Structures are given as C-alpha cells and as structure tokens.
Image (cartoon, rainbow over all chains, first blue to last red):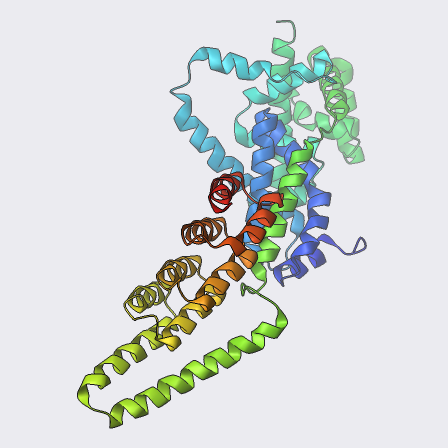
Amino acid sequence: MKHLTDEELMLAVADGELKKLSVLFDRYNVRIYNFFNKMLQNKMVSEDLTQEVFIKVLKYRTSYKNGNFTSWIYTIARNIFSSYYQKQKKERSNIIEDDLLNSEEKLHTESNTEELEHLQKSLLQLNSSDRELIVMHRFQEIKYEQIAEIIGSSEGAVKVKVHRALKKLKDIYFQTVHN
Amino acid sequence: MECKDIQNKLIDYIENTLPQHDKSSVEEHLNSCDNCTKELKETTQFLALITKDTIEQPSVSLRDNFEKLLENEIKKQEPKVIDINHKTNWKTYIQIAASIAIVISAFLIGQKSNNGSNEITIKEQQVLALLQNQSASKRIMAVSQAEEFNKNNTQIIDALIQKLFNDKNVNVRLAAAEALAKFSSLEKVKEALIKSLETEKVPAMQIELIQILAKIQEKRALEPMQKLLENSETPTYVKQELEYNIASLF
C-alpha cells in the first residue's frame, strides 16, 4: 500500500476501501495539524479541527474526483478553518480581555526559542489570508502552483501575495522585537 | 530602479531565483543604498528564522479518535442484519415463506368462510403485511397493532419474534420487544427474548430486554446478563441496569 500515490489511495477510499484512509491519515495528519496550529496557536482546537478534516474526507469521499489530493484536503481544511474563524469572530465580542491574554500565553512551547516564539506572535498579528499564505508556503512548503489551486488564484498572483505577506510579517517582527 | 522595486525582489534575490540581469541591478543598487542593505539583512535573517521552525506532533488521541471513527464507518458499511448464526438464517427464510403461505391460505380460507371470521383474518393479514413495510414508522404501527391479538395467534407472534431479531431499525425492534412482553407466558417468546439479549448490540435494546426479563422473573436470563456485565464493551449505564436487575433474579 505504501507505494500507492495519494490520489490512488483516495480513489480507492471513494470506491469503498475505507481502510486505505488510514495510510492517508498517516501521510497528512501532522501536516494538517501544524497548518491549524500555525493559524490558531491552539493545540486542542487544532486537533479537533484536524479530526474534522478527516471526518469530512470520509463523509464526502465519493465527491473526490481524481484531482490533486493535497489541494483537495487543504481546500477542506481551509473551509473548516474559515467556519471556525467566523464563529470565533462572532463569539469574540463576548470575550473579555483577560481571556485573550490567557490564550496568548498558551503559545509557549517547550522547544521554542525566544525568537521563534516572537515569530509566532507576529504571525498572529497578520490577517488570516496573509497568514495562511505564509503558513502554506513557508512552513508547509507547498508550491505556489498548488497554493494557487487551493485558493483559486494564479501562480503569479500567489507568489506576489506571499512575498508581500512575508514583508509585512518581517516588519511586524522587527518592529516589536525589542518589546 | 527605485528602492521599492528593489525591495520587492529581495526574497528572490536571497533565494537566488532572479534572472541574471535583475540580480546585477539589485547588487548595483545595494552597493549605494544603506536603507535597502538594511532591508536585505533583516529579510535574510528573517527567512532563516522561519526555516528553524519545527514541526509539532499532535497528541496520540488524534490517531486513536481517527481509528475509532474509521472503524465505525467501516461497520456502517457492512449490512446491518443481526446474524444469530448461519443455521438459523435458513429458519428465517422458512419463517418468512411460511408466513407468506399462511397469509395466502388465510386469505383463501377467509374468502370461503362467513363474514365474522373474515374480519379477523383481514386484520391479521393487514398487520402481517404492514410488518414488512419499507417505512419503519409503519412497521412500528403494525407491531403495536399486533399486541391486540391473543397469544394463540401463532403467525402474529412468529412475525413479532422475527422482527425482534431481524428488523434493521432499532425502534422497531424495541416495539417488538415491548409487544412480545405481553405474550411472555409463551415458552417460545421467553426463549426469543433471552436469545435476543445474547445477540443484541444496541444499549437501548439491551436495557429494554433486561427489564422485560427481570419483570417476568426469567432465571435463564441470568447467564446472558452475567456475560453482558463482564463484557468490557458494555456501557456503564447498561451495567448499572444489569446489576440492579440481576439482584432481583437471584
């Protein structure tokens, strides 16, 4: 089973061989989890959302039609992220400042150096569309061409956007580095 | 080129993806512009930092939950018939065939006989037909109507037993169990209820069966109840029900 491509595996899953989904889970769960965790900086929620991605993959398996699997699963992940994000935004008006501070404190992970921690905080200050471009291209090493497919844009436009977002992030990072 | 144009090219310059011509003009500009040189330094430092970021591992529960999820989905894929064992499958077919034969013969006999008995057989026939209806709510309706027959009506009771084991809808099985409780003085009904407790997997059904069997003080049910109690897959609330009712059977 290991030699099969993602696409071959997913077609088999769509065809009813559900067991093969566990190979795709092995290949993708960490990536998808890290995508969410970079976007949200919240491990618990990221795990839940990752779980949700695979629930959707399972539920809508028959709608998979031989396209690039990475693009397909990231499209699902983005949709899940955006509905989570919208929901949060609505609820956020009810959250008092203290809660926000607390959730920021959760950023600290054992292995992170101070610089990386600061990078994470800067990342959170970007708007979510810039953030997701950086997460996908820089942290997840997805090619421009594929990102274009995922977000429904052209390769050239994606490249320009990624570069702009990186510059914004860099500026945020250096402006706040001494705080 | 202006500073802005140069700065837009810096990432490509650092990653060495610029065409030679652009590369030269960037270098030329950098030689004479401190501001852009500072920008270059920052960007280089920043891109290097990003590459230091490490991949985090999710907790094991993510995989555990996924595996449970997949297992459930695979189970759902399989046909939902409750398999008592292969031998009795034959019995079921024969039971169905027999009940159809009985319905037809009852119909024929009913036609010949007088009006009074005719009514009963038509009612019976309706209930038996309704028990095989596609819609679960119709089948439940039929089961509750079946309760009104008396215990000497073998076809109806056999049909209810058949529903108790084989209906794919748990609500129909529940209704069948409730209806059969009314006929629990019959030996074959008792046996069916015990057998059902041994094979039934749905907790709501298990609880219903436990209650019925305890109510009719069926001591032979102790063994399957004990097994269910020892089974690690049995949910806690079913176990509580078992503990309570087992005591009443001693």
